[in-house]
Image (tube, rainbow, N blue to C red):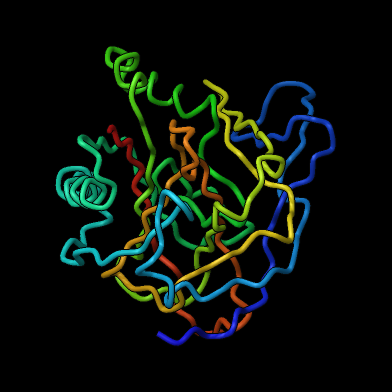
Length: 273
C-alpha cells in the first residue's frame, strides 16, 4: 500500500516540574496539590500506518492491527458485551500474542462528549482521551493483577505477564478523533513520567510522557469496525520487548464538519505466558 504523507496534528505531552502529576476524579475535601498532565502541546507528524501494518509487532513497536469479526453489535448491552464479545477478544489476543491464557478484566466505550457536560460519563462510557499516556507502570501493572487475581498472583507473576488493549470502532469507519500510537522503539526511559489517578477509594498510577522529537507516531486512517488494534500497555519482560506503549486520541486537521462522531470500544486484558 502506498503511504500517504504524514499529517501534522497536536498531541498533549506532559511537563516534569518536579512535582507528582495527578488527575482527580472526585472533589476532595480541603486543599490538594493539583498538578494535571497534558500541559506540553506539540505539533508532530503522524504517519499513515497502513503500509507497515503487516510488519508491526506488539513486542517491538508496541501495537499491531488485524482483521476482527464485525458480527457483534450489541455494544449498548453491557451484559451481552461481557457474555459474547469478551470471548472474541480472548481468542483474538491469544491468536496474536501466543499467550497460553487470557483474562478480560474490563472495557470502556468511548464517544465524543460535550466539553461542558461530561456528567454522563461512567466507568464504561467515557470520552476519548486527548493525552499522551500508557495505562500502567512498573508498579501498577503487577498491582492490578494482584487486585484482580489475588489467589493466583504470586504464581502468575513468576512468569511473563503482559496487558493488551483491543481497540476498535463500534459500527462504522473512524471519521474523527482517531487514535495515534507511538512506536515504542523510538521512546527513551527518560521520556516516561509517573502520574497518579486519584479516586475516592483508591489511587492508581499510569505513565504520561515528556516531548521528544525522536518519537514516531502512526495512525490508521479509515479504520473500520472489521479491524482492531492490539495495544500492549504493560509487559513484565525486561528482555528488550516493548513494555509501555503510549497512545492518544487526536483532532485530525482534515476532519470534515459533518464527520460521524467516533464510537469505539477498548477491552483490557491480561495475558499469561
